[in-house]
Length: 252
Image (cartoon, rainbow, N blue to C red; front, side):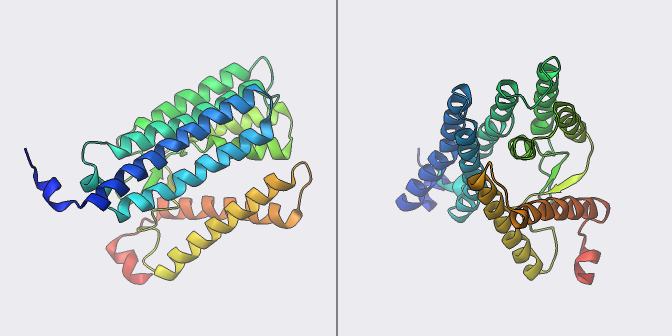
């Protein structure tokens, strides 16, 4: 029977909706290839594939909103698809990376990875894991990014473990972390929102540059990458303590 949605949705919109869902699902293919690269101990290729998965995740939501994907393809739960792919790419792939590499102490490696898995399972399944004002609640399982930094910095195994366990604990702490592609409630100033998008793109370019140069480094690119990380944490803490309300929106 013809429903209300089928009368409104054009064929190009429906095709675009299916293509966007396929694009989101392709992130899982990147994750699978990353697992294979890790299995072959080709860790640099694995990081490139993990980077590609992050790019897909960063832009698919924007495309989905442009075509009103819930109307275009009402039979597919895009949010569920996105969460499945994200849990795989942001948690399971980096966990396998940690198991295969020597970034963690041998006798504590499995324990640390299990702690990451449990904390991510909690974070992903919270009803308000993505808050109504478009923030992540608790550390948003950026384990693939954490793995990149640990691989790049080459710190001691014990230091790496302490950092990862601290991040796992932060999954349970209700700090609101910036959602880089949904900045509606970051600030009422559109120029600041655009600036945040631009510095996020700059961070991505700098971090990709570091990956390209590895095992060599570049102090300028390191400064940009770490500077953005500190900015991200600072803004997240600020908006946790001082959320954007109608009163603060007027003042900003």
